[in-house]
Image (tube, rainbow, N blue to C red; front, top):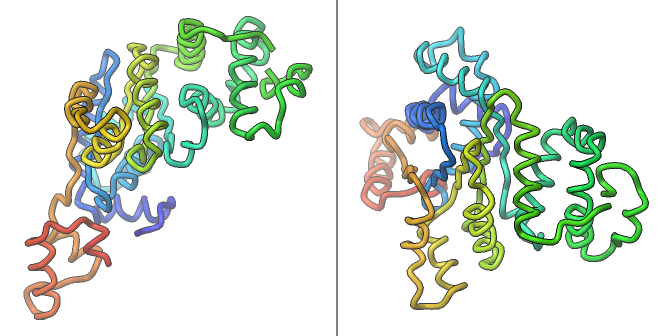
Amino acid sequence: DLEINEENIKDTIYKNILCRNKKLVMLSKILVNQKSNTIISIDGKWGSGKTFFVKQFEYIIKNVEQFYDCKVFEQKSIDMMKTLNQNSIIIYYNAWENDDHIDPLESIIYNVLNEFPKYKDYITNNKDMFNLFKDCMINFVEKSSLGIIKSENLKSLKSFQDIADSIQTTEEKKAAFNKLINSILIGNKRLILIIDELDRCNPAFAVKLLETIKHFYNNDNITVIVSTNNSELSYTIKKFYGEGFDGYGYLNKFYDLIINLKCEDIKQYVQNALNFDNSTYFPEDFSFFFFKHYNFSLRECNR
C-alpha cells in the first residue's frame, strides 16, 4: 500500500523497514556472478511487496554511490553493488501495464528503447539497424494504437518512430533483438530485465510473454528477473492450456532459480512500519499474534 516513489524507496532501504536488505544483497551477489543467460523468479503472494523489492534493488544499483557514507550495507556489499552497476544495464518492465499490446517482444523492444532515448538515435543513424526494425515497430505502433495510427502514415517518415523495411520471420526477429541488445551492451555489459506483475496479466498475454522470454532471451548477456505470484501464474497457465495441464511444473522448468519473498521478520516489520510495541500494549500484542498465526502479507498487516 506504500506509494512507490523515490522517497519511500530510500526510506525503506535506509531504515530497513521491510527487513529485506540482506535479501537485496543476496540478489546482487547472484547477479554479479552471472556469466550466461539466466531466468530468476522473485516469487511471493499478493501483498508481499514484490514490486517494492525489485524497485528497491533497481534504486540501490543505480544509486550505489549514496550508500558509501552510511552504515546500511557492509563495505564489501557496496563494492559488489558498484561492480554490478558498472557491468549492467537494468530495465524495469511492468507486464500488467502493457498487456493490451498484442506482441510482447515488440512491446519490450519499445520499452527498452524508451528507457534509453540515445539508442533511438543510434538506430536511426545506423542504416542497417534502422532498416531491420522499421516494420517491426510500425506493426507495434499500429496495434497498440488500436488502428488509429495507420502504418501507411508512418512509412514515409525518416525518424526511429516512423520505421520502413520488413521483419517477417521469427529468426529475423531474434536477429533484430540480439542486434539491438548487443548494440546497447557495450564493453561486455549485461542486461538485467525485470518483468513485473506477470500474474495480473490476461492469460493469453502472460503465456505469450513467457514463451517470448523462453525463445528470444537466450542471449548469454541477459538475465531476466520475473517478479510474480507463481501460484496465481500457474492457474493462469492452466486456464490457457486446459485443466489437465501442470502449470506449476511448467514454471519450475522455465526458471533457473526461484527466490521466495515472504515477510523476513514480521515482528521487526510491524514495529518499524506500524509502530507496534507488542510487549506493552494488549491490542497490539493480540494483533501481532494474528499476523503470525495466519501468516499475513505485509499488505494484510497494514490493513
